[in-house]
Image (cartoon, rainbow, N blue to C red; front, top):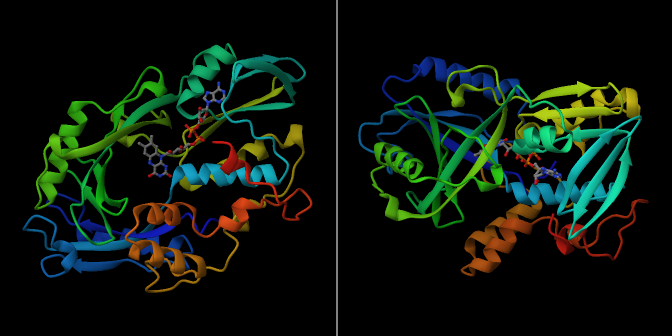
Amino acid sequence: MAPHLVRPMRFVLPMEAGMRPAWMLRTGLFLYDHLGGRKILPGSRSLDLARDPLGGPLKEGYRKGFEYSDCHTDDSRLVVLNALDAAERGAVIRTRTRCVRAERGESWQLTLEARGGSDSVSARALVNAAGPWAGVVETTVLERAPLQNLRLVKGSHIVVRQLFEHDRGYIFQNADGRVVFALPFERDFTLVGTTDNPFSGDPATVATVPEEIDYLCQVVNAHFRTTIAPGDVVWSFAGVRSLADDGSARPQDTPRDYVLAVDRKGAALVTVIGGKITTFRRLAEAVLDALAPVLGARPAWTANSTLPGGDFPVRGGRGAGRQDTRELAVSERGACASPDRRLWHARASYSGGDANLRRPRAADGRRSDRRGAALSHPV
Ligand SMILES: Cc1cc2nc3c(=O)[nH]c(=O)nc-3n(C[C@H](O)[C@H](O)[C@H](O)COP(=O)(O)OP(=O)(O)OC[C@H]3O[C@@H](n4cnc5c(N)ncnc54)[C@H](O)[C@@H]3O)c2cc1C
């Protein structure tokens, strides 16, 4: 879908005292390797952390561990490319535009505000996909009763100077049962997160609090040889997860699956609760399935389609842990070797699709000379 944006990463899972036994983890990783039909990324393997260099940054005492494949992406670039793709297929993308009122009749009458002005559009169907704002949209824009099954959970991250020099990430099961990641970040740093704390209020105001920074420093100090204190944190940030509340006592136990609420009494309304980046295309297709009686049914088409700039062959197999694709092999090697931080950042962010981004396809499939919407307008 987006081989220029989705980067493979190997994760190291150290065995901890009191954790699930090794046979159970091995079985889980075997299923993980084989059930998903994985073709490109290398499979999981056992590690002897007492001897393997990957155990080097960890505190003494770790013996067994596992390494497995996953991926990471730049979520803001992913949003931009989705918007660009949609625009190329005929969608109207309106950035910095707030829906302030939605009146329901045979169709929806929506009042939109942008850049000091407002205008009105009508729609046969409305999808409330406002993430953690879904509840606010429900009560203030749609003037309906509060969503009963929306649970907001805050996740904070800290960034510190590099805790290890290799390109793997670590996934720890902390003593409190929570899972915390430590990931290579922007070449010279390590990103540690997250927390899982109940949240209420305006998601736009979310911020990391000192207790969360203390907690994440403690997690680092419990697992790495290098110890850190809050003063070592160079940056922190927080986000709010929208989760479908299943009544779990602890926020971290709430499922990350999405739930759709479909209401076709009058003009159609679909409300999205929960979800993950990893399932966003499935979610979008499920929304369109739910709206098929209104908009008409069309076969799903996204499984094998690429986002702009991503239509180049991807090779894989064992040893493809680092990018092993035509464009990325060039861009990543060049980027990693480059002493120029700006060049590194530009290549890491925009590699693979620059020509496509500059010249988006017109509706008839031809390349236009127009600059991409994503580059000329922030999305
Ligand atoms: C801490 C944290 C860690 C996460 N980790 C992962 C992970 O590792 N893997 C993974 O797959 N997912 C992860 N997620 C989940 C992922 O970020 C979300 O699933 C994803 O961002 C949801 O995208 P979305 O477009 O549905 O919602 P959002 O990205 O929240 O976008 C909602 C949009 O609606 C807009 N909006 C709100 N009100 C209005 C209005 N009235 N009119 C117009 N627009 C409006 C907002 O401005 C916003 O742009 C994580 C989330 C958090 C918070």
